[in-house]
Length: 353
Image (cartoon, rainbow, N blue to C red; front, top):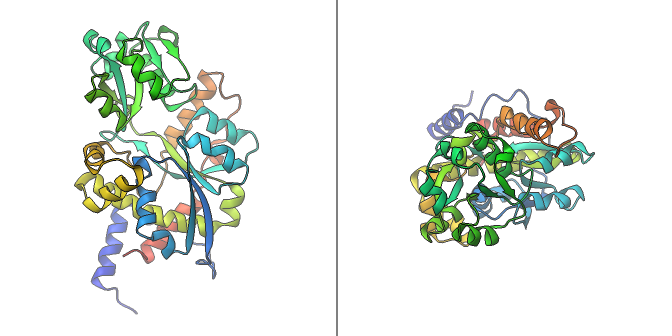
């Protein structure tokens, strides 16, 4: 019997502690490392840190994956390209629109969780106008002051729509108790807030800190306080890709799992190498990346989804709004075969150590 070296033992122990063990099966594939190209969509923000790490450290190349990246300002904007077959994988925020696409014959599946608002890690700030702050909107219960308030969001069915609704109802108000203004980008909404013509916004980091420093408004509370462990985004692919390119999906997952571990470590320790990688790829200063890291989007290292959150969001859009006429069966929302095999392969032999 071959004995494990101390390094192999420690590496295996680390993976066990991270939850990267216990997969029930591994596909037998003699051509597992066959070179492959993956056309991937992503949004160029701090939350894309694991992708930046995997790319910069050649984790994809080590597994013979050639990533062809495509940047989209919002994950939802990459969905038409995915459906048209122009992309193989993309990151997508959970929304009514995503669930609608999944019900309309697009044959899509979530297969890797790409961020959640874990307690203490919420990256989406609830920014309120200075006037609302003076009225008392200074914490998660501040929505009780939002009756008649103007709430600005980009679109119906979005993360912001969901979070503000949760906040209003938590305060005992109804959705219609506030005045909703749709179709507002930060370029439009922030000047309106500065003029006290808009009262409440959902604004991710680092934009929220920048707006606060400019005196536009104040951060009153965070997404994780409104909806703890709310799943923000997942990697999405077609069932055809996940079936016919299974080894590619597994290898992609392995690279992201390794990068997730390094991203989360840097979020806690401020690892300068990772800070620089994220800064270089987002165009933000290292100091800005460092300032926001206590609230970087939380990544579950092995990509295992918080299914209750995903199911609850779909149910919300279907039961509470007119935005989702049909739902995806719960057992067809998420395909976990790739992440299960990736966990087992990493536990047996981590190629990145």
